[in-house]
Amino acid sequence: MLATQINHHVQGGSLRKGCFVRLKKYQANEVKGKKILIILELDVLEELGEAEKIGEPQALESNAQDAPTKPAPIPSNGFYGDKKPQATPAQTKSLPSRNQAPSSSAHANIYPIEALSPYSHKWTIKARCTNKSDIKTWHNRNGEGKLFSVNLLDESGEIRATGFQEQCDTLYDLFQEGSVYYISSPCRVQIAKKQFSNVNNDYELTFDRDTVVEKAEEQDGVPQVRFNFTSIGDLQSVEKDTTIDVVGVLKDVGEVSQITSKTTSKPYDKRELTLVDNSGYSVRLTIWGNSATTFDVVPESVVAFKGVKVSDFGGRSLSLLSSGSMTVDPDIDEAHKLKGWYDAQGRTDTFASHANMAGATMGAAGGRSDPFKSIAQVKDEQLGMSDNTDYFSIKATIVYIRQENFNVAYPACLSEGCNKKVIETEPGEWRCERCDRTHPRPQYRYIMSANVSDHTGQLWLNLFDETGRMVVGMSADDLMDLKERDEKAAAEVLQEATCKTWNFKCRAKMDSFQEQQRVRYQVSSCSPLNFAVESAKLADLIKQYNLD
Ligand SMILES: [Zn+2]
Image (cartoon, rainbow, N blue to C red; front, side, top):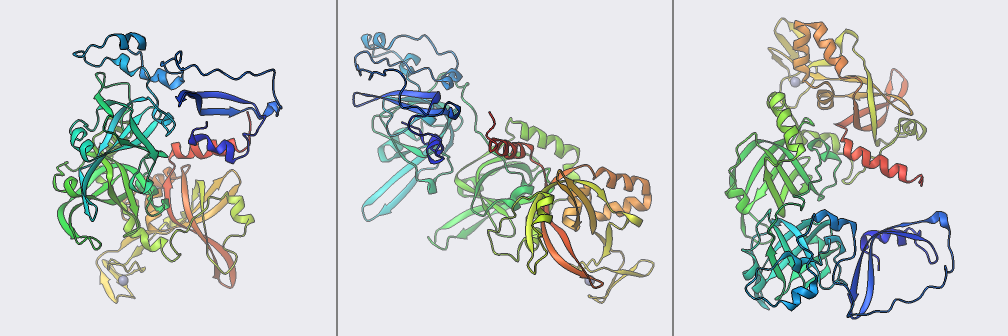
């Protein structure tokens, strides 16, 4: 029997009758007196072709008496470290000692979480509780009830478990976030209701009356909460309603306020936090209920969130799900890096908010994807050459920023939302034609032309203030100020901005200038490379070549 995570071998058509496979990970089970092998990982050896039958295979006799209760030698088992004395199960049974604490030999049959399925019986998992919900109650015509759920994590994966009614009473206090537990069948394994969960598993558990839950003596050897962070700068490219993990420095903490739900008419407490990270962006994140009222984290702490929902309200904003969790100053690389970055420069940086980006991304219907192209593809596909605007993304390196006479920024009107170019009519008097006003000084805004390159070609991109600020690493005002004092230093800042690689989101549009038509490529947002994500993309690409 194949575990769901290798369904792709069947769907992709590589696993066919008569083909050869190499078993890499499996679990031997017994169901109703029949032996079943659940395959967790296999390679199809396509180079060996297909054969009708090899040799003279014999059916294995099922012999329940001799069935070993020791687990099959699955590699991931080794992860749990040296188990305590491997007392044979038979001995354990012959010593019906009542006053003995359950020894770890009672947990000899430990399954990895990814091996759990409705076909697994008699199992124990050893897992860390990474999240525990509040107790939820319901009332309806059929009566009332309560439930709570926990997220459980081991080296192989994650699963959600729920306790209803009596199980809610008996188990709720036993579970603590962060602690490691042995959980043993009987316990129901069923298809996950994914709309209520941010856990990536096709199955979920429901505690039974007889489910055994024990806190493990040794608390280490089981991984901590795992995060899959999206940088704040990358949120633009995340679809609305996606659940993500995010880590950032707490820049601002709002007051608790109450809103009334439109659907349930119930009041909710909420609090808005502002997070920043080294992508140069800030984002608003809303927390709810107890988390909101009891929140007492000091600003400038690093906070990691697991399970936040992305909304497109005000550009991009985040909301902590009830199944999500929050960790303050977690002992993980990403947090230490952010702390270092914040102390060195982040504290004084200015940040672009996704709210400001809304204008740049609106205009097309929601859900638009900006597919990644190579520069050669952008040209070959003649993007922007028709009447429509084309949208695309490229990964490219800045090789040159055009800077004759330092024309990378223009003096703009200080009036809110105007941005029109102003002209110095008298010293200290900058006049805006549109507002019909004079300001004592302008606000410089970037308007840059940068030559970028990838392995297929080169392209000129236009960058405006938001993206220019990210690429240069300082505001145009600061740059022009520096230029007044030390032109050489300012030129060096621009020089520093080259030879850096970014993911650019662009639009291509036909432009007429002095009766000449040409395509202009305008950057609507950019983000520094996330090397882990890029490597995974490259690995996928390489896999498509089917090399071995
Ligand atoms: Zn103006």
